[in-house]
Length: 142
Image (cartoon, rainbow, N blue to C red; front, side):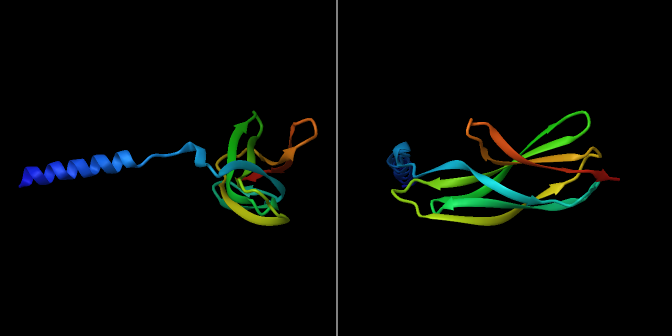
């Protein structure tokens, strides 16, 4: 009886696995950068503290939804650079109503270095396809 049960369980698992398939043709959204219109940072940071960074994001139509921030790190000899992009989800629908809503969200940032931080917030591309940024420098006091 135990062997029969084990065989039936194995067949059921095999059928379940085979019957599930992912169809790549059914994708109905894509990730897209959203325009950052502004950000609020303190005048100075304190070493070791955690700060909320408030960011204003433009949502141009009702098919675009804000998903998350992408923060990449680079540095020079004299400063820490953080490039911030707002990642959105663009729903693939037949028609999208224009809304031009400005939404606000935040991310937390921990100050780990004594060099000044330069934040570069992605605002979109210019007519030549070059990325444009709002740059804000924040010095660190120990």
